[in-house]
Length: 332
Image 1 (cartoon, rainbow, N blue to C red):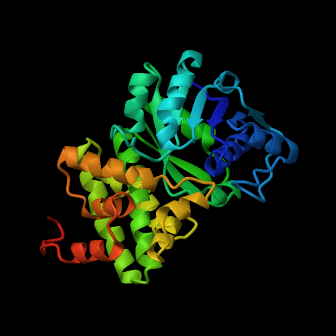
Image 2 (image 1 turned 45 degrees about the horizontal axis):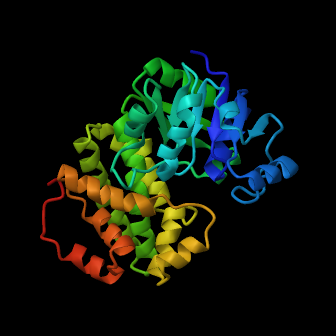
Image 3 (image 1 turned 180 degrees about the vertical axis):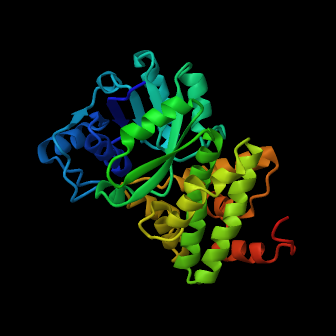
């Protein structure tokens, strides 16, 4: 399968950056814009000033608010929030063309069910070849053409190779994987851990604490990946360690910056109300905690983040709880 036409669903920062990558690679590129006012702004200015200011959109990127028109593609890149994916599937199912592949570019776990996005797609978009794209990739750096490496995972290796070739351009370098589960789980959980690291930094608890959270957080990612049937080597790759280090080390991360504000004493509702973009880790925290419970996987950091975000616990109480846990060997 040669991929010539790409549709990007979602005109936030990440969807806009992906449309730029597709167009630079010579693909026929359509960007689906759900909101009419945003579509008008993009068409008039050829710049996404709401989510990616200062980056011009070339005329090669076609803009549309008609989902059926957008789905006339060889592959569809889903870049809307993870919690909206089931709604997208319901709207897209009657319009989906046979042979069109799906690439999940959102990072999250459905809050109500604990399902990964590819598990939702298997039921709601039956017969569609599902892949996922994840890795250390701030949208603004991708849009500006700075060096970026990501993982594209799927069960059909030939299709993964075609997707890699379609999206590979200049400084954007995809690596292939067959571990769909591992790549998706790692991409989702790192957002929760980034909130934890942000809280630590916002509260002034120091770089030692942040490094410990990254390291022990990686162990939590590994346990959940293995329990879901993914592979350990994926955790040490771009979608695992690579993405975790990036999002836990820079305030450009929406999740880390949210955590920093929480650590400084702001209320979650206040932070969310002042933002246009979504920090996926907020909803994913509850889903990760529930999934870990179902699979009997120990994830104390993720559980602590969930309690702070959704159950009224405090950062001080959770830090004290983590530090008072029984001593254990690191490889246990």
